[in-house]
Amino acid sequence: MTEVKALVRKGIEVIPVALRGDPRQLPERLRAWGIETQAAELLSFRQARVWRSLLGFVARHPVVFAIQIALLVRDNALSPVHFVKSAFVLLKAPAVLALVVQRGVQVVHVFWGHYPSFIGPIVKTGAPACRLSVFLGAYSVRRTIPSQRRLLQYADCLTTHYEGHVTNIQNLQLHPEKPIAMIRRGVDLDQASRIRHRRSSETPRFEEKIGVVCTLASYKSVDHALRAFRLVSQRRPFLELSVIGDGPERVPLETLAHTLGIAERVRFLGRLSHVETLEAIAHLKVLVLTSLSEFYPNTLKEAMALGTPCVAYAVPGIVEMADEGHCIRLARPGRIDEVAQRIAELLDDDQQVADTVSAADYRIRDFDVDESAARLAALFRSLALDDRPLPGLLATR
Image (cartoon, rainbow, N blue to C red):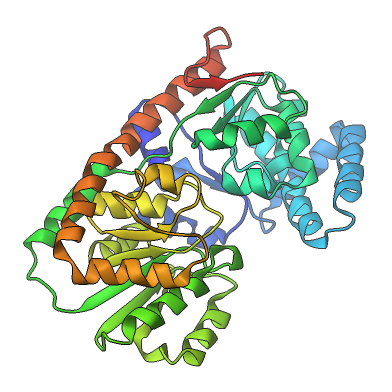
């Protein structure tokens, strides 16, 4: 959503479309991000237009829809989870097409290339002149599902935020000549600066608090952060851990906190608004990210912009973003003892904190959302006009 706001400032009319969530909560969620409620759409099975769009598409293109159903069954026969999630998107894809036609959309940007895969063939069937760009991040590259490859056939351009993904993306494609634009996902440095300024003017707090900010899912390895906190907290009786986020692993993580004997010092705060999350990060002594599957997480960028030192695993992408450990303190992947050691070093050494924050201040300039939005805007305009060379081109093969 940060990039949506920046794209609007660049003169691009953006219609964010969500495929899941409660329509009654959409206005509140958008206001929390500072986005006009009328600018976005949330497609729910509770809405009659979703079913009208589906029935209308089937009536006009019965063969196309039958083929998509057959492919859905064939590709996901051995994976009920992928089947259900892909079917969920397929049934809503005609409603996306209806929005494209009704509102004269020139470019559809698919964020994530796995479960939204069926949007590509449906949109291109009903609106062949509409251009399609697809973002592929770490999850899409490493956890591909069968239908993702077909989406790439329909894409006019692929985007990613990390150069290390390029070879993997090329290997995924059935048509490897498709252009790939490397455009970093940015953070709002002005907003971070304002929050940071307010924090500096407050009366210093004497509490010691470190934090985790992420979706509470198994692939985020939040249990590593809890185990590292237990090691660090053994000689720090007033240290607390704030866990910001929600997800299917919340109850198991709460149980683990009890098992480790740290439940009274771990606060599960649930999902906060974006602004509330930034405010919370700004007041942490250390932000900890123990995911082994994320290469360029926005949480680390935002913490860097807010002047909060970070500890993370040395996985590809984070190593590059961390400038080899100068602006993010790194531990070897899976080494919980090293995570605890890096946290302790930051808590005990003010000079190391100052050096880390100073290095992060310099590095984070490369992730200004205004710069990334400018490149995205140029890409979308080139796709819409269909006669300009694509900017930000990284590789073709």
